[in-house]
Length: 154
Image 1 (tube, rainbow, N blue to C red):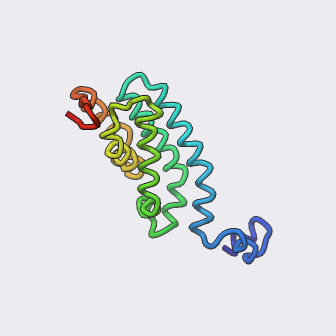
Image 2 (cartoon, helix red, strand yellow):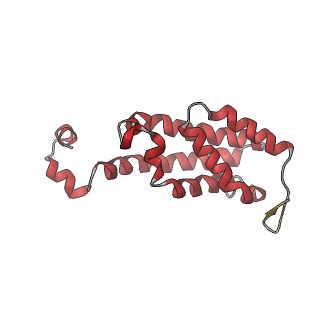
């Protein structure tokens, strides 16, 4: 906090007038970028010509956000992006699920939206998964696209 205060030219006490701790500073800084990422996810989902392209593009947007913050996360809360996201996990999953369904105009994916959002989040924080894995999942879904009736997958 002292180094940050020095860098921005204020006393540490001044920072604590606005932020209770480092976590709140990181969350505040990331919020604007996350809102921008959600807007881009909505745009790519709406523009997708098929499920595979849509999920891959969503994954790319999440990866770009994660890559931008990975160095911060590695210094924060035990050095892992996934541990940093744990506190806000449900909220993030719901926001990504909306990009999958509402913004993509894919109401038929509603029963799977949380699972797909979870997979997208996992791909964004685990370098060994990524866009290729999401594309394969989308291909498998498209090949055996579930039909929904009354909110139930059949």
